Image (cartoon, rainbow, N blue to C red):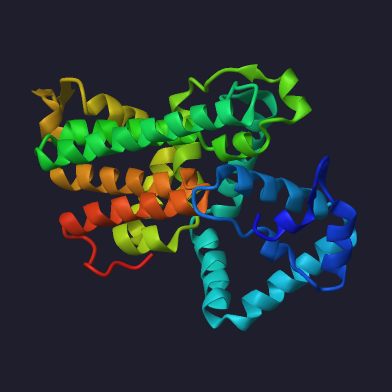
Length: 305
């Protein structure tokens, strides 16, 4: 947005001059994606302009070439890509990623959550929905601190469901004024199992940080649980008396501290990874979850992102 201000005119952005300056290397597409923290409108405008520019095949090739050079120049980034490929193979990642993409694309093309007629009204709805999910997670943390582990786990699963429901909300805000929205219906997904899958896979399928904090085996188990109906069964176990081996059991006998801890940490990390669409949101969200992880002793004080 900072760079874009030089290309504004009364009736919009001088796209042709912008294209010429990019082709002549006076500016780069990456510079267009620079905006101030908290400037939602500036960020949305930048995303939209870059999307338009990438429709130009020459600019798209130049962008991909620049991106490749940046990655190759960073040994850390190269290793990260190699690690991602290995983890995708271990986690049935390619198959799961295809299913995830299909579900999210279907949701984006058929329904919407944001219903405002202007950017400001859509932004207001967006912020309210994001705040709701963060508040739910704060309640899960509070329940964990109070040693109410079944309630902490239940609220964490509820957070994951809401993350699945809101997984496209950042893109909805960016596309707040697109004409295709007229054909979409305002609805929310009611399938718990689908929301569990989308919420978990969107943030845990490729996440070295989460692998490191909870452990790769734990994450592989969680991915399997999110793909089956296990999360729904776990959700019920958090609330209701049941029979186990012929004996009645209360939720506290099934949901222990370790299980609750895993669920609270998982849901907090997923909030940042999936709903942290804008850089300043991700930083705030990851800071909050790091503080909790340090508090319960699973992350060192200097915790790495």
